[in-house]
Image (cartoon, rainbow, N blue to C red; front, side):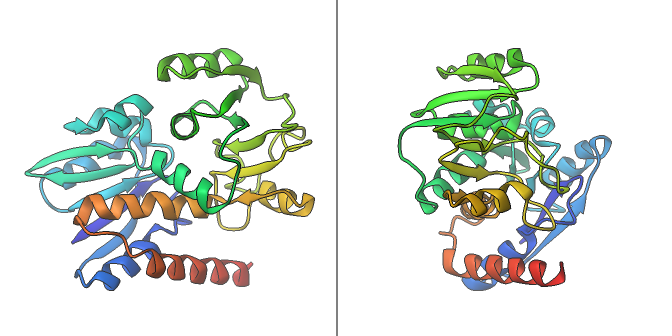
Length: 265
């Protein structure tokens, strides 16, 4: 089985380690590579699945919305989210799925974050859409540079919530970072974690994000982007193989990759 992840940047991706471990654990011969693809190259990347060069792929930032328009068919969740992160070859057609939604829900449970209560979601792109859909039973506030973008996201998804600017403090809420901030060491808006009761950081990069470090210093519950990565990876693996994902093997590979990453920095 030949698999890949398409993105730009993509060198930091931990997906190859997770999926290679999963393939080994269930005894499926195969490969999984990180492939840097710019916007202009995405059509050809998807076509490589259609013609069978690859059996499937993940899609990461910034191509998830574009991928929705390049597939032959999309799941209802992917259409609703407006984003695709998993491509599956089915009888010569490329079917797009969104496993980020289940990845958020799974990592939320793993992290012991509140099953109810208010959440502050930063961002209005594909990652934010996945977070809104996964957490729609919570009281949701979406914070963006332009509040109208957050309002448009909520209206498109049919989810009740509020839209605010990025200067809203996270007091009493679990803050969900659904922006790329942190991938390159950027800080979240200074007020985001003020009084927050938890952090779910969907971003991850070559080192621990500043938001995760600050949340841990404040002693509030934290779910890092790597845990969401594991959750969505398990769902993707099942779509490609029809087999239940080997969580223990994938978690060991993730832990080893994180330990290696920290040691090198």
